[in-house]
Image: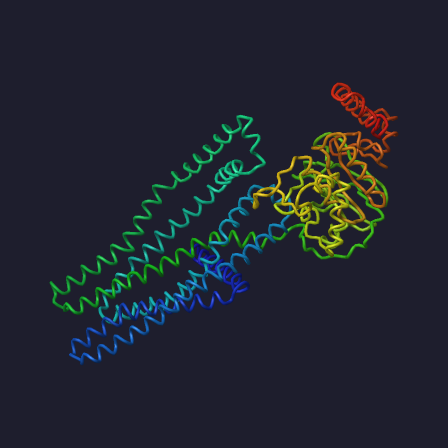
Amino acid sequence: MQRQSAVVRTVAAHLFALKLIWKICKKRIILEFLDQILLQFQNLVYSCVVIQVILELAGKRKPFAQVVCLLWIILLFHTAISLFDDYFQNIVLPVTNVSLYEGIGQLLYEKAGNVDLACFENSEFYNQYVMAVRQAQIRIPKALHNLCAIAAGLAAVVGAFFLIFRIDHPALGFIIFPILGNFVFNAILNTRIFRMDRESVVFQRIADYVNRTFHLADYAKELRISNVFRLLKEKYRSSVDRQCQVIDRYAMKNMILFWLFQYFTFTLLYEGAMIYAGYRVLVTGTMIFSQMAVFQQIMRSNAWTLLRFAENVMSSVKDSLYLEQIRDFLSYEADIPENADGILPSGEITTIEFSHVWFGYKKEQWVLKDVSFTVSMGQSVAIVGYNGAGKSTLIKLLLRFYDPDRGTILVNGTDIRAYRLRVYRELFAAAFQDGKIFADTVQENILMGRHRSPGEDHERVWQALRLAGMADEVASWPKKEQTILTREFSEEGLMLSGGQYQKIVAARAFARDTPAAVFDEPSSALDPLAEYELFTNIRKYGTDRILFFISHRLSSVRSADIVFFMENGRITERGTHEELMNRKGTYAALYQIQAENYLAKADTDRGKHLSGYWKGGVCDEE
């Protein structure tokens, strides 16, 4: 029953691969199957039938011209198949490989972009994702090759059985050896290899992580000014040692299984058949030397035919284990699918309401606890509090990266889960504290694929750069907004400071004309003057829209219409800056501490030039 289950699983996994390839490139399936059929037919005819016919013709003393004519037919037949195989290998295969690579990659990337963010925090799912991405480009085309080779090989095996039976009935008994070798010992071996790979993948991920840190610019400075190299080296060595331990656990049995596979598949079949033929010629006299020559050639050829057939079958069994991982990943259904249908939201947002919202990344480990509030068009909302208070989580729920465990989030009085997700998210401009810069131009990093006309795009980019405080810097660069960022693909790419990168990320939000905007710690890498300028522009930008911004620096929230102070997942204080200061609670105490520390540093380093930033909410230019 277990073996039958394995067969069913193998067939199902390969049908999945076949359907996938048929969807991407039908030509590849048709021509690869034809190529395998022709090659198997050529091998069977050329290696077995032809030799037998020639020897029979010679034994019957047929005219030499008849033999030569047969040889010419064989040569033309061989040439035609070889030309087709060359065409397939050198033209069809490279071209369709590109198509398959692109098609499979697109499916994987679309699925990766559609899975829930929570999946990337689930180590088991992430291991499966890594394994699927690594193996898909190899295993899916290989599955097609194996299927075509098995279909063609099956026909060749039937023909081989017939030829062996025709020459000597008992010789068919030797077929049992490669069957045992491949379908028993090799099957067990392949299953163990898959388990070994699965146990090793988590340690391979650690090794890959360490490798990345040594060639990515993000880590270059820390590696040079710290002793973290030693820690990473130990982590790498430990991951390699753990992989070796996994291999050691499997090595001895794997070696024995491999030896049994080789012994039964090659030695007992080929050498045993030769001993048997020699016995019949030399001892019993029931076979003449010419028959022995034919028998040897047929057994040699059929040994390889059977071997390749069995190898393809067992390779398919092994590949099916990986194909199942790929299929499971591609068939994953997200709790919040990116292409989820729903009602279309209007182009305006009049109200946003959180109603008794509870949420935890893990069950019953609440990050947000009974959060309720309502904001209206034109209001600016500052969300402040200690690290881990739930500020960024609140924004993730608003953008529907996650759904609440309890309670509802309403936009214009409608539960946001009822809206078409992608259209709903288009209502928000967003700049995140961990926003990433892509290896592309400044313009593309700001527009992020949202193009209109060239003239309008140009104006949007420069307006956004002005609001982000980067216009003068970008204008001074030779290629201006067409400047490539990062040196990932271009030696001319610019490596910017953390503050400059943060301004580019902020410019992405400024380039959007949306009814709501979110700025999550947009100024953590900026100096106080740049931060003041940025928040001034954020408030101007948010005049006619709902604006949420998160900041640890309480000075930046003075002019917000509403301030939410969060502690331990709850909004513990709310009101205007003045109201919270008059309440003399935690917000007021924290604000006062930050103000005193900042002014002390400002007095020491730069005089009192910046004191207005804290005391009056504006910066004196005296």
